[in-house]
Length: 426
Image 1 (spheres, rainbow, N blue to C red):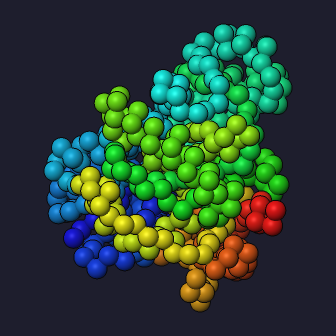
Image 2 (cartoon, rainbow, N blue to C red):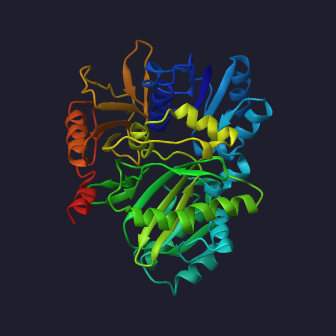
């Protein structure tokens, strides 16, 4: 069978490596892919992830038997809808369901309507009214652009001056384009954060191993928000009791709400959770695999990924036992210096050939030059993932390998997993 994976980052590389384990897979096409993905798939860099017409034409002309649409933008643009119209089985939500991520306003109103626990909030499309509301607000507070913003559309002002700047940046300066035409202002929640990705066919749901993301650019959770500087799995804060509470009060009610709204969700539904003193609450939904959560979750999946994805598409997930490996996984992101701000590209990358058997390097922001040299082309360049019997061992191996990978301006956090280790000790 020929497969097609839409996207070109570390998440897509992790998905492709896992799909390759199925013996029925012949060729995997990655649109557009990247320099490292080219080792595992046929990359088509001329077709971008948002080139929906070209993606559908390519799938039809290359006998694609199953497609995976991984990033948020093509999902929101209806890529799955179009592939389905062309008769191609596909993993991912259709556009109406993808609104759960593509519109923060839709998601928050959904939770309010159906009693799904989340932070108190208000919605604004007028900057003056937003600022008037903030005059009497408690700080810190959370300001979110309504639409997609590459994981960077959430600001956490500590005082009114910072809040004023956040509103101006999002709504007036349009730092995130049209995504900032509306904003959500919500209360600041406290407690451990947990990411839970889940396979769902609209009715049945299979949560994956929990994970802990590290969003801030700097050690000690300082600096600006990024797309994620590293992850560990499982998240020790996510106890069996918390998992049961989330299933009852969040996971199943969310699926029921989406069905009631006439847009059942099929694919990977990502729950960004906060374990507050008042119980688990939803910080955000994503309509797809998280990045870099995927790079620690999928290595722990024992059941064949393509089989799971086909069960989601065929709405038979409830009949499939999905199993996971014991142990832990840790991912350390190697980024270009300056990320998430401006950074230089085209820096040659050196990766040792003798990687340990338990370590995988997922390629995110790189490309091949005409002479075959691997160079940087993005902010987050590589994700170094190690699997181990325990978290401490996984982190040790991930960092040891990361230190052997070189490119000019390489930047990484040195404290990935420290919060998780403290939680294990406590």
